[in-house]
Length: 421
Image (cartoon, rainbow, N blue to C red):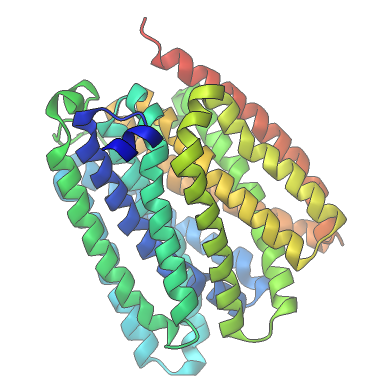
């Protein structure tokens, strides 16, 4: 308790739910980061030129999954639909593991492409469910104090997952690691139930966190986003984030493809970037995130990541090398996980409970992948016009500057909505 109070402003009755939230997030991100390098390698192996089509397949998948999820949310209490969702994805992973073992190597590329699409859907849903529950259980004032530290659990899981894959990918068949991801998802579901059981009831009621089914229709989330300037602002922030992230992802894929011929070496490289990102992130989250948000406010904290991207794309524009891309990725992703992501989740603590699951899930999944599509096909179009990585970076930098402005507006608006009237 002494150590916790030195690094995070936590009250006595918040300690247990905060630690369960950390453990829950640990298992969620460990499950994803075990398979993330496998997904990235399969994307490169399937041909960088095919990545826009894989992103299109992911968007279509989101259109199919979102109505199913909102149907579950409308009809089932969260203590049921949350573990049910994780169980569904765990069964899917077992199915992919069987496919990779049974099918001949000649069909491996096509299964890998399907796995790339599925994993790109999986990671957004499992993380969105986690943060929806956080926004449901914790009030805005608690989120400002606790979400940075809660995110430490996820970063620890990401470090564990990426380190496991970096160590084992060249020693065993990487697809066998899918079973480890299955086990971690089961543990995430257990931790989620423990968190819901240990959240102090007065806090849960004050935050609107009762466990009744939400009711309503499957399109409520979409309608809510389209009629709320605040949620449209969050969607815009997400859209600019994903477009610029996709530009960088494609630049990384091109440079890595040209630099490494061996598939295992590419997997290890991606895992090492993940490991560096997560080590830097956890150090920031433990000692700095809460202090940064309290000192400069959510608006400036949301603007920090776009600023990193403005500078990063300018650097890639001048020196499009493997080292530049790697450093930019580490700084961008660690800034996102340590500062921007917890602040982005704080934005949802001031909206109605139904919107925390339905509207938020729509933004976290469909809008996110729609941004991928815009970024992927825009990148392909710019390449067809003869622009290389350096020139495309100069297109991305102004987008990041616009993203910065949206972040400043959202932070100010969140403060207004959180203030008592």
